[in-house]
Image 1 (tube, rainbow, N blue to C red):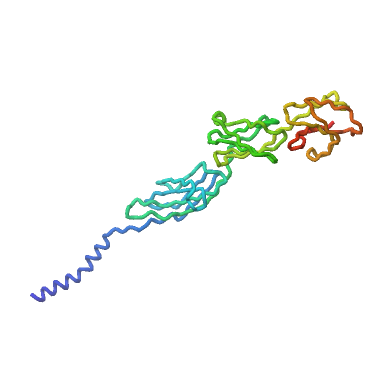
Image 2: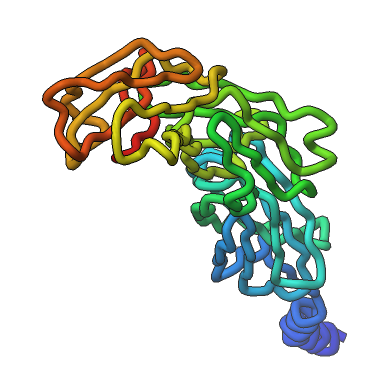
Length: 292
């Protein structure tokens, strides 16, 4: 009996590793956490961006973008993405730095999502303004047009030596995709910024036309001559100066107070070729000139 019992004990001990080994091979194992995408890139198209990344088998993705530098605190936008390793995000702020990050999302509760892969990109300036035609520009007003499919709410108007102003875009303007900026100074270069709140959606520069001065054609070769002007324009003097001087740095020979139509009397010692310019008190330079 004793030898038989002893043999059985030896046999059981010998077979134990086999049972343990079979148990380990049949147990299914999982990683603790998914790998994050090995690559993550952003290609900018004005104010749109195309993302691509290295796919992770069996995972979906969570994409986040934020209008800051890797802080992910400012206007976070979140996108859940499945069955693709590409995404296009449109209509971002122009001329702005953005942060983006992506992680693989696990479909198995026992496996954690991956850590994030991050990148930074800069959008380009968008410009919803249409090009100006000559007919859009007058002496005191400019007609502006833009892509009416995009939301905007005001236009900032600025010029050198003048205070900035803001023009509210009405519902009618939005529907038409255009507005007329009036009350401008003749012969002046302006900058117009199309905005939505603090967001700049377009920029265009244009100069208003100068006031036309038309002397009486019958009297252009002798004096006295008659000059005509629009009495509504804000000018108060006429300058007579020698041909060849720059209109913004001229040295007038004579200045007279203007009426709607001014007839110049003969003035002694005037050269044969002289020029006339209408002048405004502010900013104190000619709007336009003509030489006879």
